[in-house]
Structure formats: C-alpha cells, structure tokens
Image 1 (tube, rainbow, N blue to C red):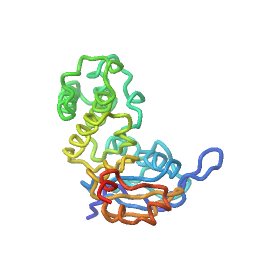
Image 2 (tube, rainbow, N blue to C red):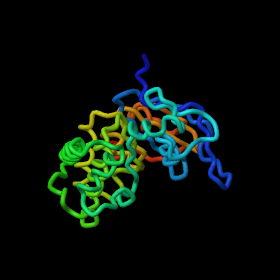
Image 3 (cartoon, rainbow, N blue to C red):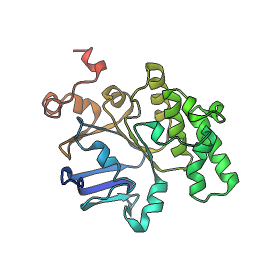
Image 4 (cartoon, rainbow, N blue to C red):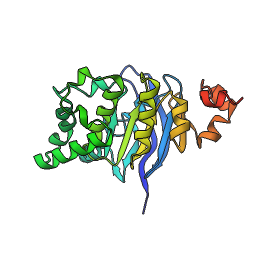
Length: 245
C-alpha cells in the first residue's frame, strides 16, 4: 500500500499568455514529511502549489493526493484533504471576527454546527490564538494573522498543509512561534519559502526548483553543501550556515 501523500508526475503548465511555468515536474511526498520548496523568484514554486488542490490545472501530467487524481471528479475531497495557506494572510481573512473566519471553511463543508464549533476551538488552541476569537482580523498583528490563517486551514482537518512563504514579514519572535507551531503539526507539510534558515530548522527534506523544474531533492545538509547547485539556482546559504564558514 502506498504511503504517498502527494504525487506529481510530468506536470506541465503555461500561463494564459503562453509563458511556460512548469516544464515536467516530478516529485513525491510521503505521509508525515515536512518538505521545503526553494528556488529563486519565477522558478515556479507558487504556481506548483496551486496545482496541489486544483486551483490550477496543468496542460499535461498528473497530481494525486492520497491516491486521488486532482480532477473535477475529486475536487471537493482533494480540497478537504489539502489545506493551503497563502503568502498574504489578508487574502484568507475576510469575516468580521476571527472565530467566524476560522469557521468559514468547515461551514462550507456542510458540517453540523456542534462539529464546526469544536473544530474552531481546537484549531485556535493549536495555534495559540484562542484569546483572539472575538477580535476583528484587521486589528491583528502580522504574526497573529498568520496564526489565524493557519487555524482556518486546520479547522477543516486536512491531511496535508501547503504554505507559501509562511514566515514573510514576521518579526523574529513571531517567526520563532511559527516554527514551533509548524514543528508540532502532525501533518504532511510542503513549505515554499525564501527563508532558508526556516528550511534548515524545520524541514527534513528540500526540493529545489529552477525554471519550472525540480532540479534537486535531498536533505537540507546535502542541498546546502552543494555550492554549485546553489549558484546555478541563484540561492545562498542560510545565514546560520554562513556564520560557520
């Protein structure tokens, strides 16, 4: 029996203007892995993430989530299983209160009210934001917004969580809280980021993208020890490793 959470095979995608974004991406995530996805701007990271729960559809290739093909027939179930946290939490927070925001997803899944309430309370507690339930999202700090956006995804009880630049704009204390939070999640995680120190601290595996392809796949230590790879992909060592050299 397969233990794959996400399988991507020969995925190709071009933007409406014809510009190529993904040129035959292949990789597999095992259940429970925390994997970093790195690459320079324009490498295809965000575009790839949007294929994992069917926001975008490739012109060829296949994406599977726990064995389900990401297509129209399975879209609702795939989106329940794959939660996505966007780079800007303001894209996800639009209800009058935090509690209503976190409840939005489960309510749209048709869950009974008592199940929604329990899920919301549990998700807010998991991210350390239970005290924010009655607050208006626009009055939150950047770190608080990020935590609430993650809670909104967790409330739907996904099996996989996909994040785009989760540490962007966070101060050092909020960033440390984020890493602590993500380390405690018992979910498969794929994290697209320019924060290579976060990758070094949190991820057991790294995928490197360049020009719409995954060009390397390995442990953080192995990837960051490959100076030629980093140069070719316009990446630098994490700051923590630069200090050692």
